[in-house]
Image: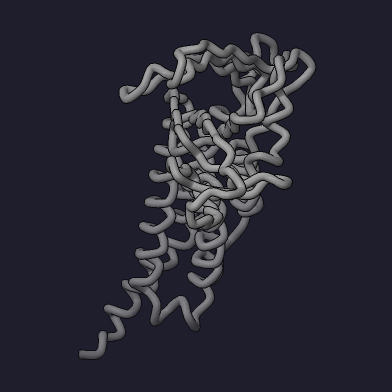
Length: 283
């Protein structure tokens, strides 16, 4: 049943209030939350201009004690690593650490931080003095902010899938002193709120091996039996050791992303209620 003139007037007044008042209240709330998220990524030192503080994370796993170690995170870079590996066959203990002149950039953290900064920039461009004239404007802004927040969250929750040759070619393998043995591969990545270290032990397949050689594709975590070619050799993963440590401030950031995305969606839903007005009527 068609709305009466009085009902339409009430709806128009409600929508005008939504555009002129509530939208900016939500934008302020979003900026406050995302600034808190951004602070988690910057982790300043004791002085405002000082170096980013270092945090040590003890690596552990409930399933193995073959690998133990400590990774030192400084902002979005690993500044130190100290890893002990007990070889399964002979219980030989290997120790390797980062060279003192090296740091390893964690691109996932850097990218997530950049997406948060872009979301804050989009919101700051629509300050209190800006007057939204249509709901479509608000929806466009919310979609743009949500895109950045979704990308930020995905960078932390979805580690890159890498082939074993890509891991072998990674500069991470050249970070250690003493040099890693040729039968070891190492990968470091973020998964949700965790810093993860994976060590792959390899053995060479003999040229006359009767094994059906099937190179493994990309994966976040390769399993024993995965095969690949490296140079003139065909290799197989014999053992996989994964250890990890929770990064509390990444957990905070993921919560902030979720709350912000919910706020954006709630505002979009309110705007959509008035779709018959915002599609054609400026206020």
